[in-house]
Image (cartoon, rainbow, N blue to C red; front, top):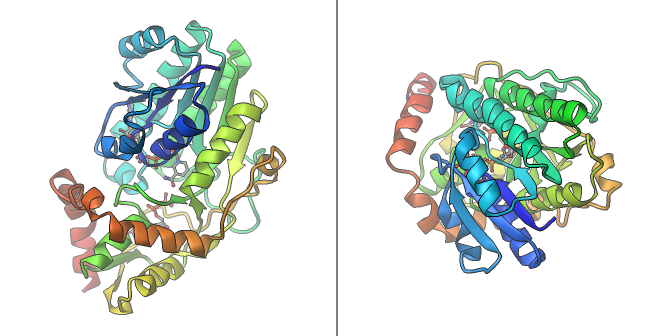
Length: 340
Ligand code: NAD
Ligand code: TYD
């Protein structure tokens, strides 16, 4: 392993992985390949911009010619695929881009990786492929039951990774991460959305009764989990990367308000997300057996994260303009009106 292409490396988790890898492994060249969709942001990569083992190439994972060119020009031997459309609510409003990237794009990357004889392919997937988990904890052998167009497209992409391993012998591994949070998180997802809205004293739209459960994983722990699986994972296997911090959405919402010194009056109960999974929870013994562990407790990480958004308004303020406001209107205007 020498020249690693990190697709989606300008996004939230991908950029955390790149910032980590560039510093941790000066002997590797890290080449970010990213389309720079609304969620891709070169500001996320400023901390590594001047590092000699970092490069950026703009491109779509579904564009075979550009993938080929970048594979050849950088002598890529390893792919770590973070590139995806990643937001459930957007997949309900407009699923096309999800099929394009999370299914077709993954297939193109796999096919070119096979043709180029790549040494290793790591695909980043999600706990959402297991669907709603009423009780207990998902293990890697559990069946898929995706419920949103996002989850279904991620499940489709992941199954194609499996097929390329079994059929073509591609040296592929898969990670399934739980809900991730931390700095540089696009402010449409629960935690960064609510923190930045609360800072502006704007309403926090809680879907349904707010008693849904998510398992929260700090972004740097997720990035290290991907690194561990990249180096130690057995080809053909999937590994859960779990936060093991199960929290109701309402608890997270109240913790954010309390950390910001804001009152609960900002909370607005709005009509639920269609097909909303009630609970996600994963077992992560398989990854732990490879030597991975989380670094700090959830509450400490949430406090650090909230502080990061308070201190880094330069990063998020300019995102919350233009296309973001169009999306906000499509997603929330009617819901918030219904709440009043
Ligand atoms: P993100 O939306 O912040 O970033 C996605 C990145 O992919 C962006 O930089 C975007 O420009 C790029 N991209 C999108 N389409 C592309 C294409 N066709 N070609 C090239 N680049 C493209 O996403 P994230 O939250 O960092 O998630 C990264 C990965 O982790 C995704 O595969 C996601 O499914 C998975 N995941 C996310 C979470 C989470 O809680 N955020 C949890 C588990 C798994
Ligand atoms: P989200 O961050 O979109 O992640 P995911 O849907 O992938 O789990 O949402 C986390 C939880 O927060 C989920 O149960 C939906 C809920 N939620 C709200 O109640 N209101 C919101 O405005 C958002 C964005 C999410």
